[in-house]
Image (tube, rainbow, N blue to C red; front, top):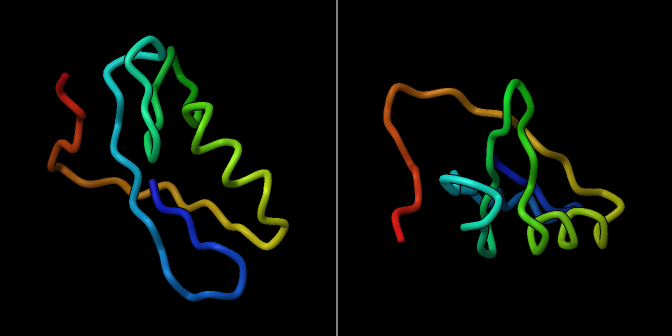
Length: 66
């Protein structure tokens, strides 16, 4: 998942947390058929009115392991 912050042209890539309980900054998790931002990532998006989220699909895993 990528986040382009308002007007900066910089895109941050978020990694997948294994579950909501293992969320951390800059991550998202999948529950059922839905993708959710972890709380800190969600706050960053909500704070930037020009933010845009892209969902990127690859064959390579980027799951955060704790």
